[in-house]
Length: 477
Image (cartoon, one colour):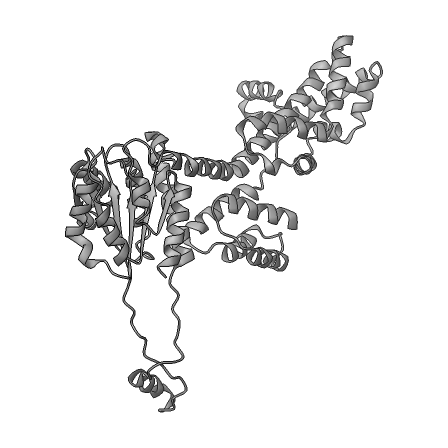
């Protein structure tokens, strides 16, 4: 059961529930203390240990119900149902539960007699009838068969299933582990002998296969669902943003929010109590009232530091509009931990668009920005507009992040303005969605602009963008 609990925690992790090694040990202690007899008690105890938020609690409850399902596979034959229904229609008074059970028992006895009669002429069938698998099938020992199926699944590593196409492969492996090849051998021998017992053995074989297929499908939905989502997220995070089709945009936006949430958790500011500086006498005396004026706790004044600011300048011309959209979405998903963000957009001219994000939902604001400022690119004119609007606000606490391909349509680069920004700002970061090999080719001014940046990088997918924003947050602490 301890290995089952560890496997269950792996399922939770694949569904984006964060479970640390320490929490895993706590869950093992909880299970050992509560035991496995009371399913509801175990569920509540593990839920209090492993789920930290309402969202994680909902995922935990769903996974718990599916993983620790109490349903047993039904290996019984349903062939006698038609006879029982016919009897009930002829005489409704005798169509009770007892009559149905008697009819089913009589049908099973008839099959067992047919198999015993044919066993004398078939060594394979005689050997099969002595096997525990066939005995359990004939007697519909659901507990024993379900346990054997679960143990076979564990031996073949069913918990590692990832792809939809692997279901048939794992079904065959589990059947082999349970000894189904012995049933196949008996079927072949009975076919060659044209034995009347052949349909009976085939029926048991088909029932076994059906139940194993159902079991594999349930385990696939449980184990592979989270892995498939993680696999898809990994693909999307490494795909160039301009290659992502429209049908996946909502998934990309969800992925951005999860990335932002992870970064926010990593870089959240922690309150620290100062133990030196100027004594905060008013607070110290006020807190001492509860102790009859005895000053057990001393409090110090905190020096309020000037908060850093972030200026995001995004090229929204046709070639890079998609990249700018996701960068702005990423930045505004980090409002709780990022310094104050002012946003600017440009193509042939530049303007501040921060008010769009104050007045509209972020997705709608991005669309309005693209509509207003999209067009042909003129970096020189746009840098001049930026200097007019914001250069006086740039100081040693300011980070300027520029996203663009630096393709200026052979216009004036105005490198002097970027150099002036470089001298004033704490750091200037340039993110270029083009490959480094393309920098400086054609009308690209990237190699010249690069000399006036503290950091420049190729950035055309979410994984690169996450890495850059992570470094940005570290530097603005």
